[in-house]
Amino acid sequence: MTERAAWTVTTHDWSADVDRDHLAAIRARPDVYAAGGRRHLILEVLAYADEEAASIGRVGRAVVTGLPDGSVSVADDGRGTDTRVDEHGRVIRKHVMATKDVRFFDAVDAPTLPDGLPRRGMSTVAALSEVLVHENHRATGAWSQTYRHGVPDGELHPVSGRGGSGTTVTFRPDPGVGEPAELAGSDLVAFRWLVVELR
Image (cartoon, rainbow, N blue to C red; front, side, top):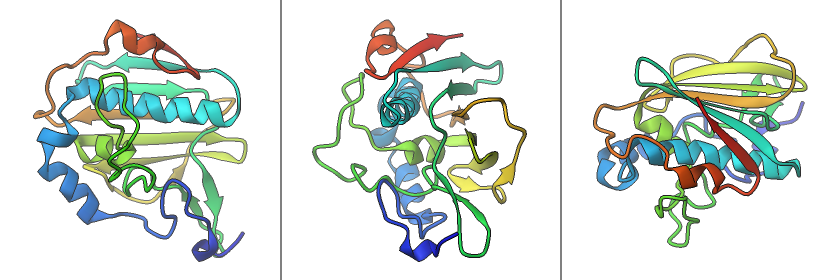
């Protein structure tokens, strides 16, 4: 257990649980952040899974599943979202859904996703979703949290392990997030560290 204020900012600022202004700014510009439709939001999640696989130096697997209510689930077998314990014994998961990715959200040279649009981070997916459930599994435990437009419903809570590590993100985009709605065939082979399967 260490003091949270001392944790190094890498992709996100550990000191902030929710950045409401950031989330509101995304929602105010669907013409920018939802320009690529539901496909772009799925690609944002796959880019995150690709990065997680690269961090452990092996090709990972991600399964993209369309659900009857219009939600999409993306499950990977990476290391699971970084989760730590603060000086009070509280489990803290990196707030990738509710705060900006400091590497490239505002960057003019942000990397592009397979649809040709810039990568902005997982907070764009959360902010533009009616509901999103983020579940992560690590060697030290497994946790889940539900968000509505990027704002958590409640505290992070432990869940049963599934055997192995990984992250599952299930989200239902806002009705205004439109076409294209599905991944293109080329998207399935666009990520260097990820084998993508559609269901």
